[in-house]
Image 1 (cartoon, rainbow, N blue to C red):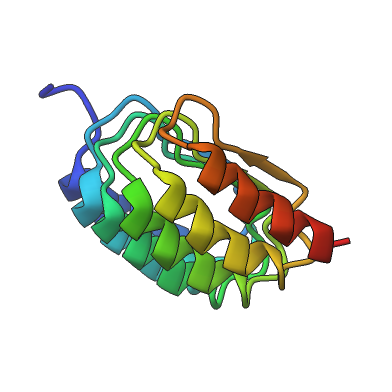
Image 2 (cartoon, helix red, strand yellow):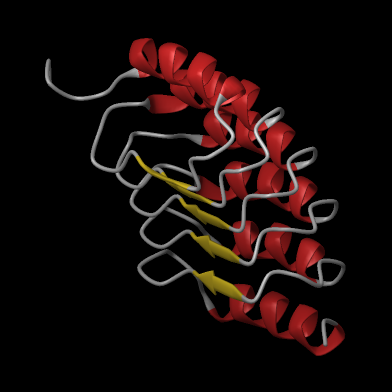
Length: 161
């Protein structure tokens, strides 16, 4: 793991992203960024307005990392793709993300598959889907969604047109 990007390197990346206004896509997948790294990236996302795609798949990001990203998404209006697949988001992470999705008007794709998300997580996401009009792609496969979770999402999608 010594060759992988960790939260320490995210601190440096964050400083650069605060000033860079030309980078539009950043793929940090398959690293060990963790929730601590999300804290640093969040600080950059609050300022950076050029980044449109951020891929953080397979990075050991938990609900705490989602809390940091959520704070950034409430402010950032350029990011359209957020890839959090194969992390540890869980229902609590969905709660944080749903709070951001109620405000954010730029995110069009949110990838959350393989994240230990239960029906409770779907309930949180459904509250955001009732309000958010920009998200057009939400991937939830390979999670723990029961028929109850599908019901929550279905009801939200009836409202979101």
